[in-house]
Length: 99
Image (tube, rainbow, N blue to C red; front, side, top):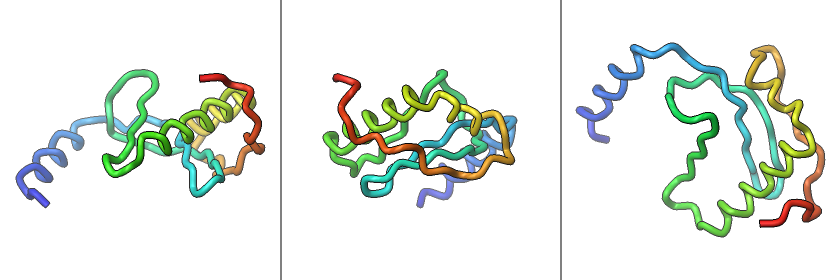
């Protein structure tokens, strides 16, 4: 790890106020929603995909997230409330969103 970069990032993020976000995760074929506090700035929607992820896998999982939010818009409550626990949303196997 580049300790100079690490120190610079820590100093930079130390000046920011944490923001609440909806966090969506896929583990295998299961989707999960929870809330998280982050120090990142950005647009209204930000997607972070590790460089080692296959683009087809990322596209499939992004489609799963789109289905989650379309069917359960109340998931945004995780971005508002700290007291909500993580939940496994309803099953999103059908193909109702076309890409």
